[in-house]
Image 1 (cartoon, rainbow, N blue to C red):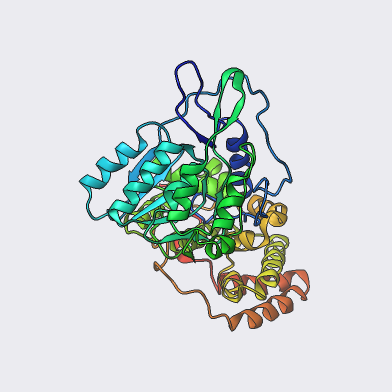
Image 2: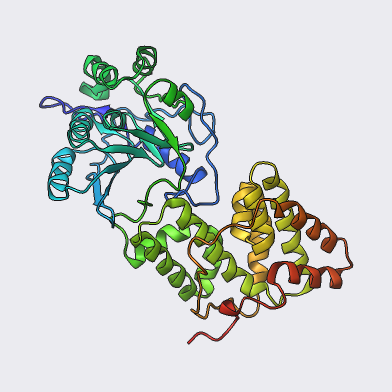
Length: 438
């Protein structure tokens, strides 16, 4: 959202989120990280300047300046399960700061606020920032924080972002008669950024960007300019994705959005997805980080699929081995731990994450074969494995990759048996044997 303001009687609130910026962010979310940071896609870094963060090379503009935008939904505020984190998400609408003030007064243990917002009203962003400063909160952006949201972000005691996170900046504006955009005085915003220690050159550049554009700097640029104080990994803070939506339906929805390869399983054996979603809720309730939850869910989802492949025909096993080997090759240079995990565990979901969208066709083919005939049915015994199970040592990557090459070089039947040993050991995982649903 742009930095819309409350206007005088007879004028309209500047709400571009239903069109320009909301469309842009929707593209970002479809092409980029899942809300949990555990999804299978990756968001390509956006260059500084007026950009589409999804990498489409488009500058999206208001298609009809006279159209009336829909009434925005109220800002969502939720307390995390450990009582130390608040998640703020959605548009910054009337009363958001007042609601946050009540929440902070009622819960004195809050230390951090997770911000995921397309922006909204300047006044609300500034008021939320004042609350953050008053309570000495750490601000954290796991996904995106655009326009008025950045006024809140820069007031944090510490200001932290994920490497893949996106902060968007542009000049404030108002909507005048007949939907005409009117440049607004940016002095208050300039003063707020400068007071937070943001470099003057960065502030000047940000406030020169047209209201229908966004400046989306690299996260390293944000740190150099004093906007953020650090870049953190997904293992730093508790996962906030289920804040306010931690019921079974919410967990299921997030799980399927983050792991689209589970949708065929959902269609054929929905109780499996229910069990994985229940595991996710348990991790969330324990305060697991995004990284820990993602690793655990990928492992569990992969074991579920592998149960359907444990007795597959040789062609299917060779297809699985070839797919895993491709992912190992791509991970070997920069992610040796992931390479080893893919080879040692047959982790199809981690392989899909490493290969990105280019691996979709292969993953779908393997999923189809996994679901053919008898569906993979989880027995419910030790489904998740040990929480926080360490990845195989990085040194194992090379040995595993050579073992895959040796197996794939054999005749079909022998290759299938060799791959069965590599992926499953001597037998399928006992906790995930294919059984009848109770």
